[in-house]
Image (tube, rainbow, N blue to C red; front, side, top):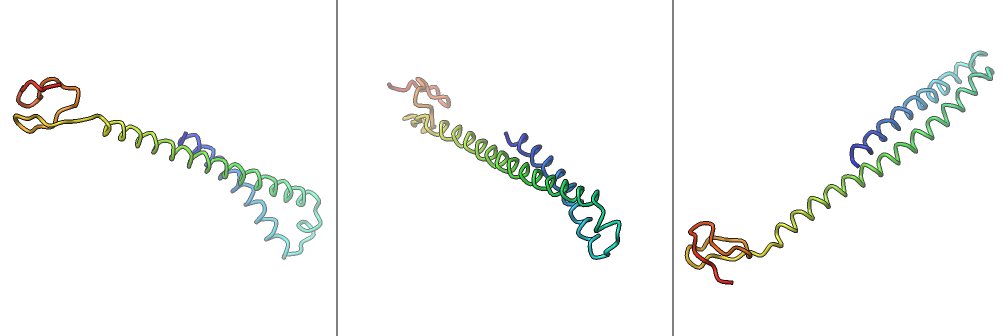
Length: 117
């Protein structure tokens, strides 16, 4: 899950950078007041396309971030669940040597003493 989110996040970042670069180029072109910049319909169309590209890219980044965070949380909870299951196995002490043995063991793994039920 985490890997998929990271890939989507990267794709969204690339799309956003491409769209954002077009936006910045258009905004930097305006103060110069050149006829090829301000009145050119094609340049305005490119600006609008870049604006949409930036919006889509940022939306993809948001989705990628949510999936990445969700994957991270899911991985953490799975690891925590495994640790809790391992800790829930009952243990007891061998009366002869004092070693810790699993609750279901019939013999001590350290000294071989037979354990009672």
